Length: 269
Ligand SMILES: NC(=O)CC[C@H](N)C(=O)O
Image 1 (cartoon, rainbow, N blue to C red):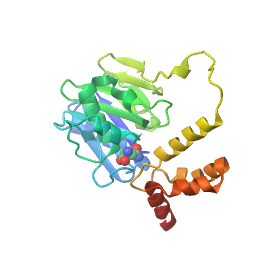
Image 2: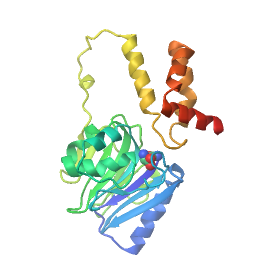
Image 3: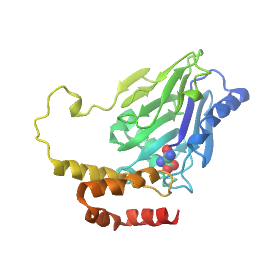
Image 4: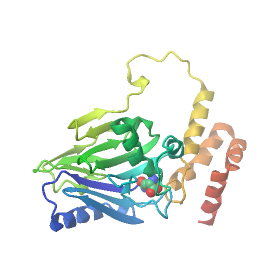
C-alpha cells in the first residue's frame, strides 16, 4: 500500500506551505519506502509515498496525462489496466504503471470513469486546466482514506488520519465506493451493485460458481513486478486452494507463468 496526501484549493502557495505538506507526507513514509513525490500547482499539492508494485523502474507518482494538465496520485492496484489501455488507443502512456490509465480515462470519459476500474484504490486527480479535482475510494474501502477541510476552505485528503488531523478544522473517513467532485462540491456513491437492493436473491447457491469466482479473484491479485504487494496473499493462497480441491488444483495453477515467476522469487527470498 502506498501513502497519498493532497491539499486542494489552499489559499497559501508559499514555500512554507510546501514544506509543511512535505512534512505531513513524510508521516506516511512507512506506507511506501521506494519513492517520495510532490507536485504543486498554485495552492494545490499532491504527494505520494510509493511502495512499488507494477513497473518499479518508471511508475513513480504523481502520474500525468500527455500534456501534464491532469495529475493523479494513487494508492492501490488497477487489475484491469491492460484491458483499459486497449480502450485508449489514441493515448500515449509514459509508464507501465497500472495507475497510469487513470489520468487518461478522465481525459477521455470525464468524471464517470471510476466504475470502469477493477481494483482496490484510492486516488486524487487534479485537472490543472480549471483547478477542479476528484477523489475516489474503491468499492468496499480496502484502501484507507480520510478527508478534511481547512479553515480557508481547502480540501485535504490522506491515506491516514495523521496526515491531516493537525491542520484541518474538521475531518472524517472518506466513505468506500464514493467519489468527491469539486465541481458538484460533494460526495456521491459511484458503486451501486445490484445486490445493494433489499430483494432476496432467487439464484440458488452454486459451489462451483463460488469456487471459480474465488480462483479468478486469487489469480488477478497475483499481478505484480515485485515481491512487495502480494506476498502475504501468496502465503495463504496455496493452503486455501488445497482446502478447496486438493493439491492437483494448486499444481495446475502454479504452472501459469506469472505464478511460476512469483513462486521462484518467493523461494529465492
Ligand atoms: N503500493 C501501491 O499502492 C502501488 C501503486 C502502484 N500500483 C504501483 O505499482 O506503483
